[in-house]
Length: 71
Length: 373
Image (cartoon, rainbow over all chains, first blue to last red; front, side, top):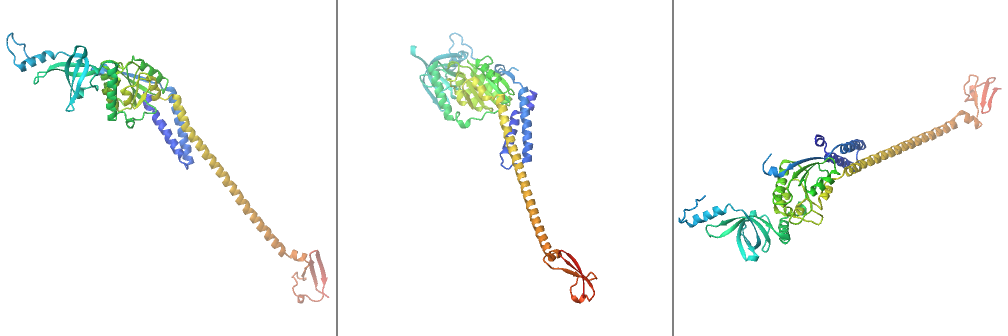
C-alpha cells in the first residue's frame, strides 16, 4: 500500500503525455528533446517495473454495522 | 398516555380519539391493495385510497410527499407500511403511510416508467451531467454484497486487469427491505470518508422485484450526488434500471463494469510504448536532419574553399604570365640583346664606350665579347 501511494501511475502517464506534447512542437530544441526523451524512457522503465511488482489490494466495510453506528 | 376509563365513566370526544390513537399507535402494518383517487394537495400532502377489489372495501391513506419513495398512480397494486390514525378534527380514520412498495410485475414496471419520466425531466440522465472516468484508477469503491454473484464476477475480471488498483468494498444487501437504505448509506459514507477515483455499483441478475433497490429514487439521487464518478453494472445485458440511467457510465454486466473501468497492464505498457516511441522517432529524425544539414554545410565549405583556391591559382598563373612577358629573358628571346661595358654597366648610349674598349653582348642563345674599333 505504501508503495502504491508513493507511485502514481496517473502522474507518470500524465508526464509522458506532457513530453509527447513537447515533441508536437515542430521546432523543438534538439538538446532539450534528447533530455526529455531520456526522461520518458526512464518513466517507461519505472512504469514497467511497477506494474510487474505491484498487487491489487482489497479492504471491506460492513455497511449494516456502520448504519447501526457500531465501530 | 391516557388512562383507560373506569367502566361506565364517559369520555370526551377528544379524549376518546386520543385513547384510540394511543391504542392504534403501537400498530405498524403492511397492507396490500390497489391505489385509487391518488392526489397531492398543496404540493406536500398526498392522499389516496387503498382498495380491495374482491371485497369492495377501501381505506383512506395519507402521507407527506417528501416521504413518498416511489411514484404511483391509480390502478397500481402496492404494499404500504403504515400506522392507523383517527384525525381529531374530522373524526375520520386513515392510514398514515411511511413507505410504498409496488407489487407485481405490472406495478413495478409502471413505477419504473413514472420514476424514469420524473428523473429524466429533472435532467438526472442528461449526458452533460456524466463525468469522465479515470483512465488508470488507483482507488475504487465497490458497492455490492460480498456474497453476490455479480460481485464475484466483477472482482474476478478486475483481478486480471490493472494490478495497481486497490478496492474498498462497501458490503451491502442488494435485495430486500434494507437494500435501498444500505446502498444510499454506502454512497454517502464512501464519499464522505474516502478519496476515491470511482465507485462501482454491481449485482447479478434478478427479477424486477429483486432489482427493486436499483429502481429507487433514493438510490438514483445517491448516485447523482456522489463526488466520485459512478459505474453501474446490474444484472444481465437486457436488464435496465434507473440506477443505470443515473450512472456516469452504464456497464452491461458486473464483468463488463470491470472491463470498462480498468485497462490491463498490457494496455498501459502499450500506451507507454506509444508515448515514448514518438519521442524517439522525432529525436532520431531531428538528429538525422541535423547530420544532413552539417554534411551540407561541410560540402558547401569545401566548395567555397575550392573556388577560392582555384581563383587564387588562376590569379597567380596570370601574374606569372605577365611577369614572364616582362622578363629580360623573354625580351632576349624575341631577338633583343643587352650589351655591357667593361665596367659591367648596361650600355645605353654609344658615348659610354670608346675605341679599344671591350664590350660583352648577351643574346638569348649566349654571349659574345667584342672590341670597339
